[in-house]
Every structure is written in C-alpha cells, then in structure tokens.
Length: 478
Image (cartoon, rainbow, N blue to C red; front, side):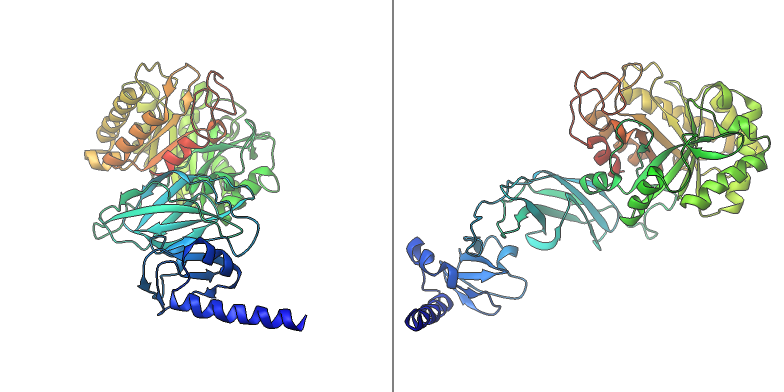
C-alpha cells in the first residue's frame, strides 16, 4: 500500500509538471493523465494539447495562449475542447439546442428562447454566449439579456450542459438589435404581450413552464363571472383565492411576471347584467383587484347581454370611471368584437359613449376572428384601421395617438369559423402592431397553443401543425 501511494504521488507530480508546461500531447498521453490534470489558472501559458480541469471537467487546449480571467475553458470553446468530464462514466454530450431565436427587444434588453436539448442522463442548464462570451447559465430554455445599449446589434449562441459538465455543440447564432432609446425609454402605455390563460378547461398548462419555454412575462387570466348576483368568481364558480387560478397567478408573479384579469366573455352569467348600478359593478371589480393584484383589468364586452344591451354597456362604462379613480396605477382595457372593416355599430357606440361619459380607458382591443375573414392578416389590419378611425372621430386624436390606445386579441390556429391564423401570420400581425405603436397584443388561448394538425377546433390544441407554445413565443416578442 505504501509503495502504491508513493507511485501515485509521483505520477501526480509528473502530470502537474507536464500539463503546466503544455508538453502532454496526443491521445495516449491525454488518456494517461486524464485523472491527474492540473486545475486551470489565469495568467498561465498553455500549449496545444495541454490538459486542465475546471469544475471537475477535463479540457484539452486547442490553441496556444496565455490565459486571462474570463477565459475559463467552458467560456472559450475556440481555445479549449472538453475531455472526459472529470473521469466520470458519462462522456456523452447533450444534443445541440435548436432554433435559437429572439422573442423580443426593448431599448435595453434582448429576450431569447430556444428548443430544449436532450441528453442520455439529463440536461442541467444552457450556457448563453453574447459575442462568444459567456453571459449566463440558464436553467430553462429562455433568457433576457438586460443592460444592453439602445439601437445596438448583439449576436448570441447557446450550448447545453449536463451534470457531468459535457457541453453540446454550439447552436445557430441569432442577431438582434435593441430598439431606439428615444430619450424617454419604451412607451409607458405599452402592455406586455399577454395571451389568455383559462384554468377552467383545455388541460391548462403550468404558466411557469410556459414562461421558461417562451420568455412571456404576462398572461390574461379568464374569466371573472357572477357566482350569483353581483358576486365575482372565476368562471362563476371558483373562489377568487385559494384555488388553481390563484396558484397560477402566484407562479407568474414569482417569476417576475404580471397578470391581466378579464371580466365577461362571450357566454356565462356575467356581472354586467347582474350588478344593478355602476357602483355595485365597480365594487365587484375592486374585490378582484384586492384579491389578486392585477396590472390590468380587461373587460371583454360581448354578446347581446352586455355589448348590444346599451343599459348594461353604460353601466360597465360608468363603473370603469370609478375603478380607474380608485386604482390609478391599474390599466383599464375594453375588448370587443369587430367586422373585417372595423367595429360594428355597437362597437362604435361603445367608443363614442366612452368619450361622452369621460371614461379613462387605456386601451381598446378588438378581436379579429370569427368575423368572416378570408385573409386573416389583411382583415386584421383593415379592422384595426377601422378602429383607429373610430377613435380619431370620437376623441380627435392623431393616428399615433389612436394606435397608442389600441390592441389586437386574435385566435391561434383554427377559429370557430375555421379561419386560419398560422404562426407566420401571427408574426406578421405582431410586427404590424409593433410598427404602428399598438399597445396590447393577446390571443385566445395558451391552452390551445399546442399542435394537433387535423384536430379541429378544440380546447387544448390549435388544430394545426406547430411547436408547443409557438404563438406564445411570438406574442412574448411584442
């Protein structure tokens, strides 16, 4: 035993000398000292073929250089090639992360997402590189790089890592340009892209999983209805707190996101007809605000019981004045249907009445689907331009002012009328909305943001071929 210990010590010493001098070369020499390589150190000269360890992983030098802080082997794949993974049995690297893409920019940040890698044991994280320099190791498949300069292009790549330290190959590169600073930062009226999430059907996903996969930071939670009289509840039957809805909201907020809470919808027992006065309706809304703390309250005014009933429409509008007065930091949105050329008479009446009553509505959102469309992109643009004109006529706004009070809420995949919104078309709609300065983008619904080509119009998938959460990724880029 004593002899074996001395031999091991001598071998270790020899390995340190040879490695530090950069003399160990070739696969045979590397194999002989793999377990005994010296730790990587800054300000050290390394020759081609030198072997070091870093965080328990072996690396072989690819180019002669003198190391510097920040040039740790996993950070500079041009200088170091990963070896055996610290002598462990797992030497299989993860697959290359796929489809690296930018999901959105601001004047100071770039949001990224990529498809998950696979591994024989398991992926533990992803190294994100900006211009070849490691900026973070993300545990999920998205990352927002903050602190960037305005109007500047940045190029990114990603590599997957497993528990043994094995690194995948380098992903595709993506270049994104931050928006102009404009002296005042981003439009303060602009709301984060917030697809609808409904916990009442459609195999609702964990919003944290969706956030990690897409970079989305906000959801529109649906729907607040009447549980009897003027008492609000999720879907008319789930308590405001203590259930799946609150759990989802808590998850979203714990990951730095926020929620918009939607009242009403197409069907169900709604608060508008059940609350006898504007004050009673405002009190019901206040119960929800106090319970869940939304950033936005969205009033989805539809159908004959609210949208086409002018007594109820006025009741809701007058209530919104009270809600805004009591909650000045909560944005107020009204959402309603449209024709292919813009709001119908009920929608125009809602806009004009909001002006007449002095209702401080932050955003008017139309729903361009189930409206007889033959070209969903062009009809969405035409409908939005119709809304713009209605707002200009009512308020005397410029085009820019009208756009800044507008939003679009679409339907992903197949609509009830079999209208098709593909991911490519939704991207076109998003980019048009951004180019015009619209301030809200949503769609119905995250529950359906999964593929099922030929599946028809169902609650838990889009009816078309797509990637999981693809529409949400696009919306996150708004």
